[in-house]
Length: 485
Image (tube, one colour):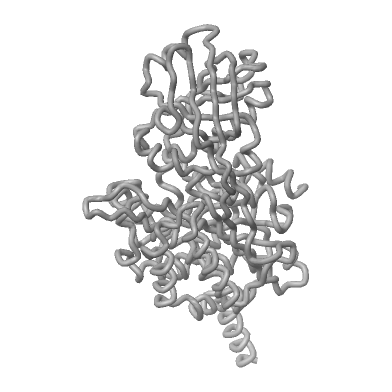
């Protein structure tokens, strides 16, 4: 009898540790290095969206999934989901009374098509839902400040700008002008980075024109804010060349449980970066993006290799996004055109990074917002890390990565990031800088980090309980509606 009890205890112990042991079977430092060194190599020229080099990275991801045994999703023709993009206008001007402003010098196009507008300009403050209700905007051009109060990151302003565009259309406006003023991303750098290379999603590029105007034009801004019946003329001319090709890369592994296999978990990361830009002090012009986001890509590749070899009870979708750096384009497209209906997707576990300054932790943006928190904390502890919640809430990180496009649909979606306690000089030294190279990463730490992610994935995917938003979260009621609960 004692032997039987002992055997049962040993069996229970082995079972309890099995997911941890299976994680250790596949996550290897040399494999991690090989992936990151390729994705962040100079030959890929910073993986700008769109570019031939980004498509080479996409092909690399495709062949990696094939090698692991990850299958294409049956509703797609291949591992690629094309994200239809449109080139921005190649010429145009914005004329306000006696001032004529130049495209890509005084303003950039966030969204637009061939346009010749002549209409009154109406300033409505920050452009909140209430602001759009205060004034009749029928056949007028709405003017607002870029972003919302409390938002400090221009990347987040793309998201809020899309919301404003919908409000402007609903109010009958014929155009939207946002006054851009950011210390974090000065106008001159914005123009270099986006003005001449910005692309737009094809579906939204057919809606009303939307521009960002340099708010340092103080006299003009004053006029727009205070004068009545100010007329504006906006002209935009689209190029005639072929629209660019870019792709999300996606594959799946079916779950092993006859019931739970009908529930899917998305493991996601963006694989683009910002390409070639201003040289640093060493003369380096290639923004390699090792931390942002080759590390995130390899986090998900590590999960793909492991789960393909040792499938979990729930089915897995491995999803690599294009165009994150251009306004979360790839994730926006997938969330609105999912290969598997989102009501079948119970969780999205995203991985995105800016850098790290503490190798004793993993920073999980949204850790405390879902019921998977305990599984993530357990996995990190098992490999010598502490999982912590986002310590830099002022940065608005939850709403700046691809996870937010799934959260907006109701899918619980945190982001697993390398350890940071604050956005300090150590982060800034590499974040969107040419020095973000594969050879200055701590691979001992990264091995722990990747193992923690993969083990988290296994625990969540095998947990009998369905992960969900915690009650009181702003996405909780949206999730209830998505899953018809």
